[in-house]
Length: 441
Ligand code: PA5
Image (cartoon, rainbow, N blue to C red; front, side, top):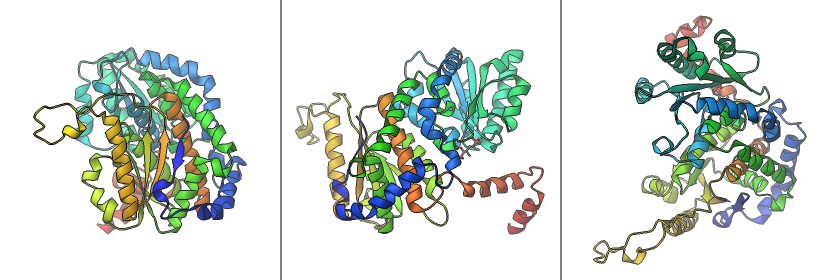
């Protein structure tokens, strides 16, 4: 099932006249993208990954198979070099992936923060397990993964001696960077991040595909779904195009003062996909003093924490709820003859039905309270349908960025803190910045 957009719960703020008013602009934004004429058009390689990655699939599968001979794979990376794989793993397999009984190895994500305890805890989970590692960094110089990869190298040297390098696969720039140089020096097998694909758009390159293949995900079906979705949303007329209408709806809501978008779902397997979306939209749109701030919530859990605000707080929000359909679980509310808890009216009712009722009840209540919901529905948790969902959001984000009048493919703001961190940590070449920062203290 392709992604569909339902605006029922946004009708108080959006109507067909609004869409008629923005149709031309949206078509213009889409033309900038497809005609490769917009800002950042040197970074549109993600649009063709479903086609260009086909050739690399045998090599990716073969590398993944070798990695899978281990009991656990350490996946080192941060931001765009981490979020997509983790999101897809939890969505397609389970948020409890590592605890599942399975033939594929556990996947431990490291190098995505600077917490000592996080890294110690993961490394202690690896004790006694046969290990391999995937290190992913396009620049090859990002502090968090570079530091974590040192820990991996040292552990692997200790354990596997001269054979350590055989257990490591790198995904990095084809030509530049410290990690690229390490590949030559240490003889790691490597895959390239295409020059024209930025981190947050890289999930369908080896950045996402290699770890996912190691976990047994059908990466070809993922590409199939994404490829079909890219073609579909590039060709449908505006009135029938959920992707372009979603981009338009976001922009219309922004113009009406809705500056925060809460990505939510009623399935916990979506939590990491929401993290991926936060990076995708946040880095793509938040610039030039413009943009919608991307936040996330997991329902129904967060109705018991954020529900009050969503219903009744500042009216500068809207929600984008992803309704994951196609669940087949018959897990139901248990019977209890005594009915001491008064839940008898639900006895035997499948959770799937109750969850759907919750979605409808909440969206209606929030709409009445003044927080609109853009409802996106997608099919089951299959690789093909998830590929479609990823492509839907990537394209919607690019069109949204052009509608907003920004370059959706750069991230100049990310560099500011990175420079300061290098300076404070005493990296050679950053002496002046260091002095300036120390004066601020
Ligand atoms: O989207 C981005 O550019 C960032 O989130 C990067 O992916 C992140 O900083 C990691 O960069 P790298 O892959 O160079 O280590």
